Length: 233
Length: 260
Image 1 (cartoon, each protein chain N blue to C red):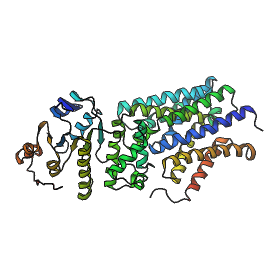
Image 2: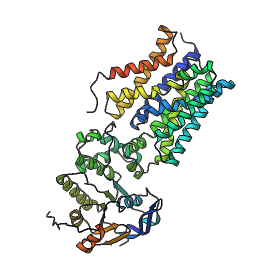
Image 3: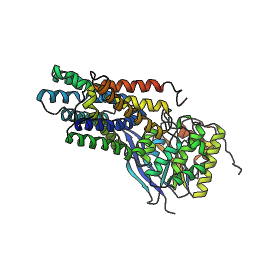
Image 4: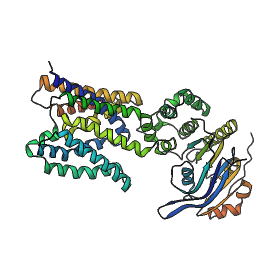
């Protein structure tokens, strides 16, 4: 299978500080890649580079048919803004020259009711806001979704909903998903590949090889406890 | 009856009001409303030079405004400091230079403006400037909205944020420039600030916000001209227009806050 994404010898630096160096990995279509690592290891930086938002050295190659959707880490939405979710979705739809009907259908798909669409972004709950961001990312029919800690600010129930949604979307649309997460049990259930970033060292492979106490201790520089969940569906 | 030079001036002023309402609405959302007040002062050195050497004040004011705007944009890119900090720096220098350059007898006009008939050429230039402002805002409305909400998401959607900021600063300055004629350097920014604030007080809906801001601005300019022409001819329209805008804002306080 041709990888949808190939990264070779990637180096990203701010001033003199190299946040990421000598990083190489590939992602196949339909993969779920989890990116893990301690704070400051460059997970968000990597996602932003993959999106083309940061300068880098080395190679980041997406196949020509790759269409990216991005769900950023929780945005501190300005409560003062007189914007409704609808305004954002419609603005993106117009920029991409797709119909407003698409905006309504992705909203319905992620479970945003018409009332929510007409609510100011500043007064949405964490879960609603996250759904809005996912709807925003889905608009334009991407085949790759990049998630930066999509559930960082959510309680467990809301978190479970979001992951279920992502899994369903992935199945329905045969999507490739790149996910930054702190939650190792989520990573274990969710990922087909794991990439760990840690102070210049990296590891890459299937979860059962990476998510071992020894590797995790090396990545986080501390013993890590996590529980292996088996998801019944 | 108004004669044609007067009619031209009033028409340009009313269209300017629409542009100021629109620009002000986005400036409010970008949290850079006060910049309009300050940026108008950047015109002062140019006005001073114009009075000193006897050429058209708008050319002088426009030149230093454009120069100041580009300087602010560049400094902000180079230093990484916020726009408001850079506007502050350029503003302080401009007021000082302007105060030194402007002849004493022209200072009041430079600061507070005065009502002037417009020639046909000035009328057409004014209309063109205002239409550019309105069209640019509508053309980039969606980019601006996404940029306001989350710059990162906007960039990931393909919005060129740096260029967008420059366009916005330019139309911002252009609308200040049109207002400069009758509002003066001190008050040209006021019509960008007050009507937008009134609009925001009254609604939480984006389209209605833009509409109400424009309306508040047009009402202030229209009634300000009417009052100074028919009731209080001893006053120049600029300050009266701004006072009416202030009264409209005060009235908007009667409504409970739009977002709680």
